[in-house]
Length: 74
Image 1 (cartoon, one colour):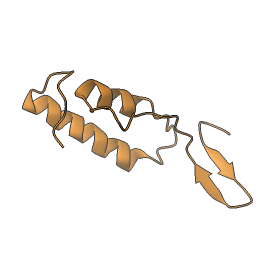
Image 2 (spheres, helix red, strand yellow; image 1 turned 60 degrees about the vertical axis):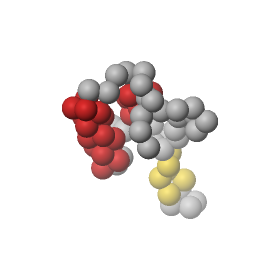
Image 3 (tube, helix red, strand yellow; image 1 turned 30 degrees about the vertical axis):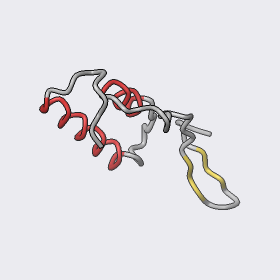
Image 4 (cartoon, helix red, strand yellow; image 1 turned 120 degrees about the vertical axis):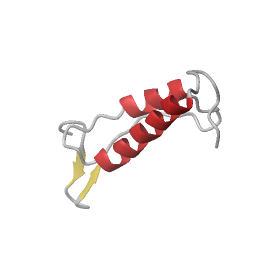
Protein backbone atom coordinates (compact mmCIF):
# COMPACT_ATOMS: atom_id res chain seq x y z
CA UNK A 1 0.00 0.00 0.00
CA UNK A 2 1.27 3.45 -0.90
CA UNK A 3 -0.51 6.77 -0.45
CA UNK A 4 -3.64 4.96 0.68
CA UNK A 5 -3.88 2.94 -2.53
CA UNK A 6 -3.55 -0.83 -2.82
CA UNK A 7 -2.41 -2.35 -6.11
CA UNK A 8 -3.00 -6.05 -6.67
CA UNK A 9 -0.35 -6.89 -9.27
CA UNK A 10 -1.71 -10.38 -9.91
CA UNK A 11 -5.18 -9.10 -10.80
CA UNK A 12 -3.88 -5.72 -12.02
CA UNK A 13 -6.45 -3.74 -10.06
CA UNK A 14 -6.21 -0.69 -7.84
CA UNK A 15 -8.36 -0.54 -4.73
CA UNK A 16 -9.04 2.12 -2.16
CA UNK A 17 -9.46 0.64 1.30
CA UNK A 18 -12.33 2.52 2.86
CA UNK A 19 -13.28 1.57 6.37
CA UNK A 20 -16.94 1.57 7.15
CA UNK A 21 -17.50 5.27 6.53
CA UNK A 22 -21.29 5.35 6.66
CA UNK A 23 -23.71 3.28 8.67
CA UNK A 24 -26.47 2.10 6.30
CA UNK A 25 -29.07 1.80 9.08
CA UNK A 26 -28.52 5.38 10.29
CA UNK A 27 -30.25 8.45 8.82
CA UNK A 28 -27.69 10.68 7.05
CA UNK A 29 -27.27 14.29 8.19
CA UNK A 30 -25.16 17.14 6.84
CA UNK A 31 -22.64 16.49 9.63
CA UNK A 32 -22.50 12.78 8.74
CA UNK A 33 -22.11 13.48 5.02
CA UNK A 34 -19.23 15.88 5.63
CA UNK A 35 -17.60 13.28 7.88
CA UNK A 36 -17.84 10.60 5.17
CA UNK A 37 -16.38 12.88 2.48
CA UNK A 38 -13.47 13.99 4.68
CA UNK A 39 -12.51 10.39 5.61
CA UNK A 40 -11.53 9.56 2.04
CA UNK A 41 -7.79 9.90 1.42
CA UNK A 42 -7.06 10.37 -2.29
CA UNK A 43 -3.76 12.21 -2.85
CA UNK A 44 -3.52 11.14 -6.51
CA UNK A 45 -7.04 12.33 -7.40
CA UNK A 46 -8.44 9.03 -8.67
CA UNK A 47 -11.66 9.55 -6.71
CA UNK A 48 -11.99 13.25 -7.53
CA UNK A 49 -15.09 12.90 -9.75
CA UNK A 50 -16.96 11.26 -6.86
CA UNK A 51 -15.63 13.61 -4.20
CA UNK A 52 -16.53 16.69 -6.23
CA UNK A 53 -20.09 15.40 -6.64
CA UNK A 54 -20.36 14.83 -2.88
CA UNK A 55 -18.96 18.29 -2.16
CA UNK A 56 -21.47 19.84 -4.56
CA UNK A 57 -24.25 18.04 -2.69
CA UNK A 58 -22.93 19.56 0.54
CA UNK A 59 -22.92 22.98 -1.11
CA UNK A 60 -26.57 22.49 -2.07
CA UNK A 61 -27.41 21.60 1.53
CA UNK A 62 -25.73 24.81 2.71
CA UNK A 63 -27.72 26.87 0.22
CA UNK A 64 -30.97 25.26 1.38
CA UNK A 65 -30.13 26.18 4.97
CA UNK A 66 -30.37 22.63 6.29
CA UNK A 67 -29.09 22.33 9.86
CA UNK A 68 -26.14 20.10 10.80
CA UNK A 69 -28.19 17.39 12.50
CA UNK A 70 -31.39 17.51 10.46
CA UNK A 71 -32.01 14.21 8.62
CA UNK A 72 -31.42 14.68 4.90
CA UNK A 73 -34.23 14.20 2.39
CA UNK A 74 -33.92 11.17 0.14
